[in-house]
Length: 313
Ligand code: UDP
Ligand code: MG
Image 1 (cartoon, rainbow, N blue to C red):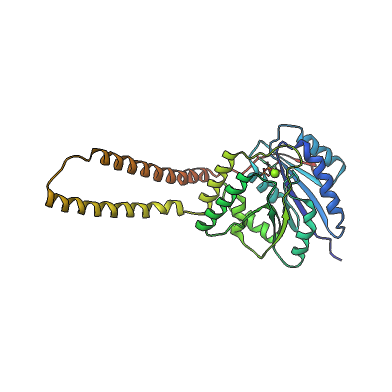
Image 2: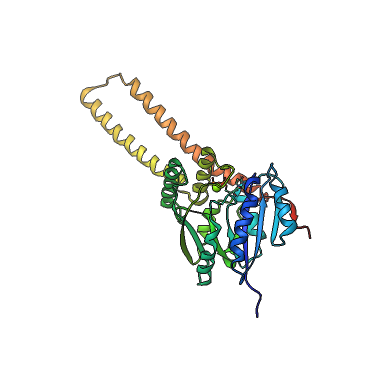
């Protein structure tokens, strides 16, 4: 008889004191229904400033399946998730949000698909009516643009909630980059994937950590991490403008030969100069975005720092 398989539930938490207890109750209820598996609950405290850590430590006091990794400050969800995935010991790893927007009740279904031979089981939000209209529209636009220009396609309406086999986790750990856009990395590693659908619930309590501006930057991060198309556009734009300028020059020369010189043209000249100046600045901005990424990547700083691990061993 071999040991039962271990499932790691990885939960990044940031200022979530209101929901931690409720989350623990719901997830343990689900997992205890499957006694054929062992499980661990791995919370990553992403520098919370409220009572979240105390709450988590209370859990470790009576539940030996709970482990807590306390990061040294708030690093953001992607580094927190990376920390959890690196420290998880399970044969399968399931990242999940603590706010109960990802229903724990879906986990048995994810595990079933995994047992049937899938390496990755995605949880797809078939119903996003819990998200605002604007969030759905912009998310839609992001997936469309990203998937057109990046090599590895990010499945639409799939968050970080999923099940990954040990080999997938191994592959993710081996990726050396420091700026970690997890959705993109998940998609990049590939493996045999199936999808399970669910309806996304509204947040159980507390509020979202992602404002519009943060999401916008997140989208830019995603696109610049996985595609160089924004850099390449400028070659084509430059060629097009140069060709247009050449045609226009021919037209001017011909017209001057027939009708002589006429001086007016100040307004059109200024418009062209300003327009091209603007285009060049945008081009430099895009290059800057990538140079910035090289700069940050070249420092080779760790993705996150751990302050403490509980229970202390
Ligand atoms: N989170 C985190 N670090 C952060 C922001 C968020 O660990 O800097 C966690 C948060 O506690 C939650 C998950 O990431 O478990 C998703 O956050 P949220 O619900 O705010 O995002 P939304 O569902 O609104 O996209
Ligand atoms: Mg949420």
